[in-house]
Image (cartoon, rainbow, N blue to C red; front, side):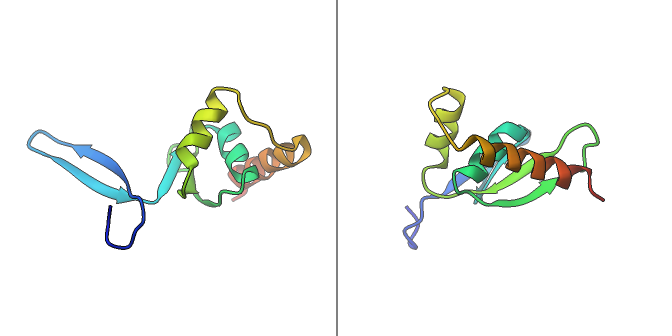
Length: 99
């Protein structure tokens, strides 16, 4: 564990000669439903990458427990307020389609 006591998450970049580990504090997903759920669960959207015209990459600030929350989402073991979830999906869609 690093000296500041924070648990670090790593992304691996592989090329022909070596593997490099880069510390990342961002969770990325292309799934708007997952992004909306994470926002409902209290995680913060830190940005969106629209460089690919056919899909949007959502950047969520990584914090303790996000991996377990994501697994629970995919295992259908989660619940949030339906109105809040719907509103976050609408807000994300508005952000995608605005300039």
